[in-house]
Amino acid sequence: MTANHQSQHASPHAATARQTSASASASSHSMSPSTAHSFSPSGSRDLAMNGIYVSHVAQNSHSNVWVPQGNGAHQAMVHCNSLPRLEKKRHAAEPAYSPKRMTEIERKRQYRIALNFFNKKPERGIQLLMAWGFVDDNAQSVARLLFGRRGLSRQMVGEYLGVLRSSFNSCVLQYFLGEVDTRGLEVDCALRKCLTLFRLPGESQKIERIMEVFSQHYAMSNPTRVKHFRGGHKTVFILAYAIIMLNTDLHNKSIKQSEKMKKDQFVNNLRGVDEGGNIDREVLCQIYDRIRDEEFRTGDDHVAQVARVDAAIQGHGKPILTETPRRLVCYCRLNQIMDVRKKQPSTSHERDVFLFNDMIVTTKASGVAKRSGAQLYALKMHSPLLGARVESFNNPQYDFGIMLILPDNQRVAFNARNYEDLCRFVADVKESISETQAMESVRLELEMERISLRSESQRDSGLPDGEEDPDAAGQPRPLGPPGSRRLSGHSLDSGVVEEGYDVHA
Image 1: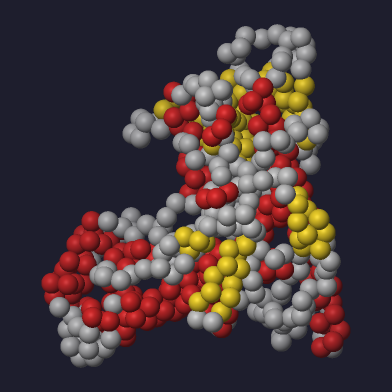
Image 2: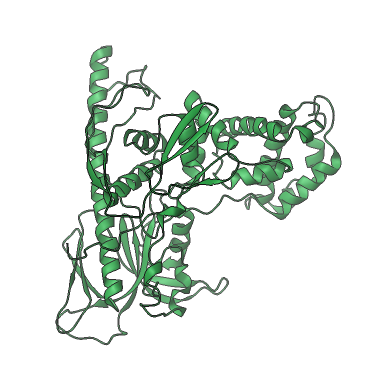
């Protein structure tokens, strides 16, 4: 990978210090889709070798989870993007749509679109994943999809797992936590391991529900340890909830140091919780010390990566980058061309370009942060990709020209440093534009379907226009198939733009 076109896994802060030859890194530009794994309860990974699905059999149930393939030439009969009529009930009959032939790139694009919807509205995203055949319509398959799959916001995974009054979501939660190996761990260590996989919702009722399932799973995994508690998994539940509160108290910056919970307070608060007995003081003190020394942290995801980029970019009018559906596709160093008819020095107007799945941001390196030493960037231009176009060009002045036509028809020209960077950047932009356009088409079609269903329900219930049918309130409306998707070669959802992608197409 050249320094001119960096994978999003490489920190943009170090890009200015790295300049390597294009030939030495051509093979590492894209991330292999084999990084998208499915996990078995024992913690081992089941890899899809040549097929589309990974199968898992446990407790007489069968589940399939789609795994991206790396060969863009592959074609298969898959679910098309046209939407069927949406049923009002979740478990409706099979959607009435016919399969069409899709390339692997189109199939991956469709998959990414479903993930985008999940990262905005988890219930809708899961419905799309089911309708498009990426995951079976059962709780075990959904749990395995959520467990460690790249491209999913850990915040939204927590929101989905914490949904109350849904037996399906409760089953997903049980299967999900069942995938975590907590054997031989102390309660707080097991809880820490679980919380790397998702972020707890903010509502206390949702936290309580998750802690209930966690305590039951922990008790089954650690029968010898739980024997020390009179109340069994009930005591584990109380202790786990207290640990969550302790973590919040000790690491909340808005709480003054003098007001934070002391060790004796933590121990005293848990007196008599073990069916009238006390949990061993030494155990509680060790838990307190571990939580004090190290805060619970959710594992890294694409949202955290975008947040780091957002913190590094400065300037008036900077857009809000930290939205859960937004992914960093690639980072590339280009030279902006002020006039395509005039030759300019090869080092002038150097730009650091951040391409997201729905937006492009052009910056200029502006120094480093005093405290952290991280690279800082000054904002030069930003634009949504919906309605944008990109094409390559060459003339006597510029061999590797890139013309970006923004939605307002403004033209921004760049020059890449070699043909490889040109091809890869143009391919990334074209695919991101295609994903954005398909995403918008799906959104509009879903909105029209929602309005149609609402009108029908009002007529059926006799309610006047403008009033909701109370029977439908709060019920997730299942969705049929839509959009198309590319698995970004550089984003955290795994997948690639294939090497044979024609940038002049």
